[in-house]
Amino acid sequence: MQLTRRILALAMPATLAALIGAAPAVPASRPAAADTDRHDPRPTIVLVHGAFADASGWSGTIRRLQHAGYPVLAPANPLRGLAADTAYLRGVLAAVDGPVVLVGHSYGGAVISGAAVGNNRVKALVYIAAFTPDKGESAAELAAMFPGSTLGDTVNPRSYPLPGGGTGTELVIERAKFHGQFAADVPAAESAVMAATQRPVATAALEEKAGEAAWKTIPSWALIATSDKNIPAAAERWMARRAGSHITEVDASHAVAVSRPAVVTHVILAAVRATR
Image 1 (cartoon, helix red, strand yellow):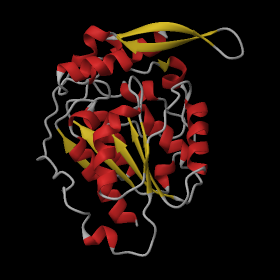
Image 2 (cartoon, rainbow, N blue to C red; image 1 turned 90 degrees about the horizontal axis):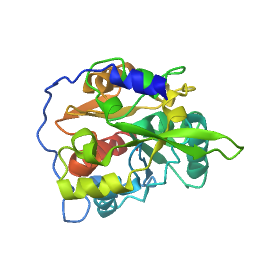
Image 3 (spheres, rainbow, N blue to C red; image 1 turned 180 degrees about the vertical axis):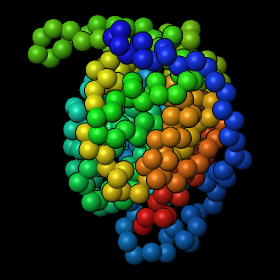
Image 4 (cartoon, rainbow, N blue to C red; image 1 turned 120 degrees about the vertical axis):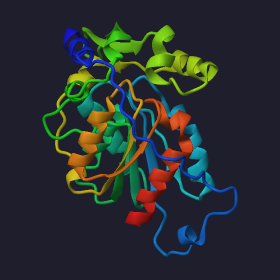
């Protein structure tokens, strides 16, 4: 626990300005002919949330993708350990028929990077304000590579029982600090609900080293949230460039899927259209 808080607290706040115009929302009319006039099956878009969140954070994106005619799945990420969470997601993917576009937010990026290894049905990886680790890297280490994260000053540790006996440590963001830290561009009333329903993450998940990285063989897209206080935008940008991702930047908080679902949808659909 002390290692995680020390690493996360290394960063000092920084301002990184990189702004794009709001991407167009998915139109209210039927999907464009470019999406419908094809013979190959539409991919299932699998959305994986990260720490301190749950799958409801994808709601605005899900509505837009479903309106555009795509099957969508947003499973619950256990947030207990990177290897265990990756194995869980592999099981989810095994039950999906046909091609998949795999999307991860925050720590969910590390999970999709591992779960897609060796799966030739995964056609694209999309990282939304996410970690894109290489083998041997942890989320905690990557968050500390550049200044800008203030997460370490806002989390509290809690103990929980481990299945085989003993206790583990998990982190939650203090409710009073959740809005400013995680979702500053989300209405306060909505952010308060997010704070109340946040899913704690085991410190082991943030400290665990990643295995092989699927982004080395699968094309990837990345959305950089330039006002992110959990993962510094500079770290997101560095990881995305290393992975050779197609990069979009937007002035948004870490909760970009909640505050800017149209932009998130735009990036996901760009990946779908480029890889079908």
